[in-house]
Image (cartoon, rainbow, N blue to C red):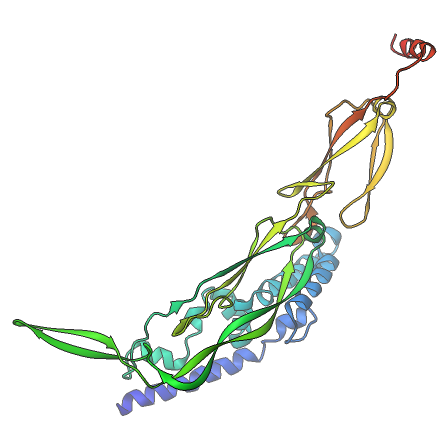
Amino acid sequence: MQFLKNIFFIFVVFWFAFVYCSNQESDHLYKILNISKNATKVQIKEAYKKLAKQYHPDKNQKDENTSEKFSEIRMAYEILNNDKKRKLYDKCGEECAKNNENENDLKMDVFQVFQNLNFFDFENEKSEMKGSDILIYVAVTLEEIYNGKYLEITRNKAVLKPTSGTRKCNCRREMVGKIIGHNFMHTFQEKCDECRNVKLVQEEKVLELEIESGQEDNYEMIFKEEGEPKIDGVAGDLILKFKQMQHATFQRKNHDLYMNITIDLKDALIGFSFEFSHLDGHKVPINKNSITYVGEIMKIENEGMPIVGNDLLFGDLFVKFYVEFPKTDFNDSQKEIIKTLFK
């Protein structure tokens, strides 16, 4: 037993030495994005967007160092904007966050290691029951999806709090043996009447949400253990499902936008030049010097929806033209003029 304790002590010393050394560089990614270690997700996203536009290779083709700098910025954002990876990075460094996707594998501390190897007489944990998930639909406008937006939602969440008295629960098990005929059987039964009683209390909680530029319709955002609580178990998840509202001008299909424009007969015959306001307010010019047919479609590149993860890439805009004919008849002299035009 003393031998095992010595091994355990040596393991603990090396573990804390590793964690200490790893944490010495745990602010490197924060420095790349020029943010503090306690920066919120909103601040991380804003810092990334600013730097990504500044150092994007497409805008700095003559600078060979830009591509490397952009890769650093993107890598820092991918880790710090992911709650699990950021927690791993803060705990054990960059390589730890890169190489370990499953947080549960690394969440294990030194005591759990020895518990799982049965070096001590720990009791195996039971698989926990889970409370019900909560699904909430969030309506978002096409403008919000195009431009991106940060939201804060305040909700009342039911949480379990200790209260007076005790209760029976399933935290402890006892082996019970029975003799049935010539056979001996043993089973586990729950036995606990010493745990503190609990009650449900409503608490106000603020959730930070980000609608990314170009986010897909029906996108789901999951908040772990923010759903219905479960006594002797873990809370369910809160699932927010974003539903895109219908727009008066544009229709969206994946990354592309579609719109209809009605022009008069004169413009359809001799051409036109005008502009319209896009979802972020910038003006889009449309020019044509030839005949426009009813139902004709014009493609305008890079005027569709932004691509998620790259604010410099966009889908296309497709404009379908309709022609409005005169509402009054032409007189005889006008008809003669028209005839001469089409000879």
